[in-house]
Image (cartoon, rainbow, N blue to C red; front, side, top):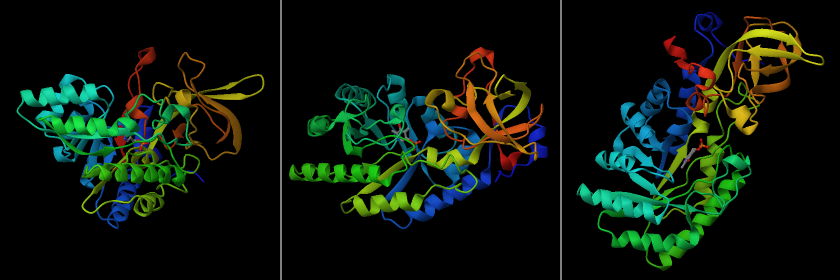
Amino acid sequence: MKGIFPIEKLERIQTPFYYYDSEVLRTTLSAINSEIQKHEGFVVHYAIKANANPGVLRLIREAGLGADCVSGGEIEAALKAGFASNKIVYAGVGKSDWEINLGLDNDIFSFNVESIPELEVINQLARLKGKVAKVAFRINPNVGAHTHANITTGLAENKFGIAMQDMETVIERATQMENVKFVGLHFHIGSQILDMGDFEALCNRINDLQTQLENHHIRVGNINVGGGLGIDYQHPNRVPVPDFKAYFDTYAKKLKLRPGQTLHFELGRAVVAQCGSLIARTLYIKEGTHKKFCIIDAGMTDLIRPALYQAYHKIENIGSEEPLEAYDVVGPICESSDVFAKQIDLNRAHRGDLIAIRSAGAYGEIMASQYNCRKLPQGYMSDEI
Ligand SMILES: *Cc1c(COP(=O)(O)O)cnc(C)c1O
């Protein structure tokens, strides 16, 4: 089964470009909203780093989600898209002074702090402004996610977060400081996680940590469990919306929220991946000695995931209904890793056919580069072309 694309409209746009199906995005957002409404105190922040296209951000903001940022630039993008500053959370191991000041000036909901030196700088900068910064501590829960090694973030040896055994010390330090206020705990174990057992392991860990803190009379207002819910890259047509019910139900069942606590989520990929496709044009069909190459005008500069993580994306020739043939689909960049897929079946391809690389809405357009002096791909919303 192939996806449905408005070929005539797409034909008029300069390739390669990103095409975002607004309908898929809206359906995804309403699935999220209808699930979280079932659970008291659940709040979702969209992780802007997955995709900061203004059209995409607008639909997400309209659906009422908050924003999860990992840089000053992302805070600026969130504000520009109209996200309320009290719905912005800001994480990152290396926050620079201007980024912290930007967060302070806008009174963001919380800084997710990853070390004591960072806490001290936030306290100093807040004092200079006569403000009190709300801080949550990102704790490294030492929970492994069964995903690609480059996208696990919750193991003890990662650069992210504060070690569990230091949790009480940092909270105590914050309590002694005048210009920060401890408001919660933050976690994030990785990305593209499909095994609910990984999230369950995180819940168990948080339950233990909460008991430990309660034994020392420390109250936590907010628990932020990060993001990481995966999507079905194999079947973008059959499974366009991730299983949000299983995801939120896992937390509702396994995490022991205390009365009045708010549970924050930071979903990126699960919100935007399936609505986006990278649309490219077939340049040449090249007959190798043993195989055929379908050379397209998009490359790893437009979508780096296959080159970076050996990621799989379903690829369709949306310009042909001819019988299937096997191709290596490759880009024009001068790197051997500029390959989107090897030996996959496409409807027989000819020069000029439009190719759709599916499930590319997350970590696609935003990671594009200008290597080889290429132009950055543009992104278009389906209801605006
Ligand atoms: C990347 C990131 C997310 C989003 O991860 P997804 O896998 O896209 O859901 C959430 N929180 C933090 C802190 C992150 O770094």
